[in-house]
Length: 219
Length: 350
Image (cartoon, rainbow over all chains, first blue to last red):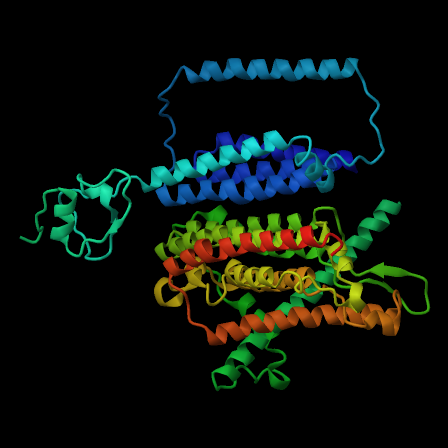
């Protein structure tokens, strides 16, 4: 029974993984990748690690891949044309790397054959939520906190990148009262860290404050 | 042989649960139309059967008999896949909800649990499957090859991602109080105090945040931006007709039902009915029956709130919706975690 389920989910995972690289339509690839994550989650459940399985589905299938699909939909990526290979040297590289990977797998299989361990049937609490939580907040607290700081940095970085700008192009129009700028950004005489908001009430005023040329396009 | 019987029993349990839930969902649709009619001073459908009691079946028949139109330039495979994903993800969460305690069939010694299965990460399972449901809507919007559909799909996925965050965070207070993710055990923890130790008493703010986020998560009024008729025709399912449209419709109502069940399970004590245990005694048939009915009554109460809101509130604007989700609901959800953690720190044997 378990072997049957393993073959089912492993086969599904490998099939989906092949589809990810074989598909020319980026959206099909993304959906196949979701399939890979879900079959992996099923394998985790069979390995008595339900928490990892749930997190796999929530984080990868439910959050990251949704963003990927979102971007594909927004950018309206067209189907990649077949028969136009730009980077020809990648093919032999891929073959060489695949050979290395297969050799590694063969080595592991052989070494597992040599050191056969009798599998324990006793229920372990390794993959259970309680044990993961207690370990994460005691023994592995430092890596956990470092990871969270890493994520915080990523968030701050994304905010900084998304918020960059605010300067007007010479032909831009300003809706009166709609934009706010820090004084330090638009007034060269103000202190550099003065963040008092200034609200230009007209296009002319905004252009003057920003020191950009302004010309009414309707003229 | 035993495993075969086990599998057959589970299969039977799943079938029973699905049929019961689908019947309730069908009558939720009818109830919605009648209650909305009452709120708006008209009758609503009351012709098919006594008081319109057969209306859901008439609707189903109509859906089956309608012509199934597929847009010419749609992405065919994904267009067919999307309603399947939506319905499947909605139905799959049904298996972890405890509908009632163990029930003993009268005059025999057979006890059957009124829950299909329960495992260590039940709550995370529910959240995971719910997050898969977004794909149904997104892919439907993309594959229809229609601007309105695409806009509806984009809006709905943005909305669901934003509100999923607040939804998940509002549940952490309950998890802290219960100390487990298993829904059956969460209900057990609320059975003290004569069946009235409901977690809403310790975490009322979390309940409010959860309810708001859940309404947004199921794309219902006042957060039904993805299918705002006035601007997007019908949103992501503009191009869907006949049974495929019915599947999206079904998925929406099943989602309402599961979200209500989760609210009942986590905040309103699940199947715990006040003083039922003192009157009937634990493990008796009547206790099981009263508890299961109590559970359904609580769920139906939430469904009524959904309909009530639809008859009362106007729709948000999209930027208001996003502002509300990220700037109000998310900090509130974080606040509930802080409050609950403080409460548990001050009174460790709460």
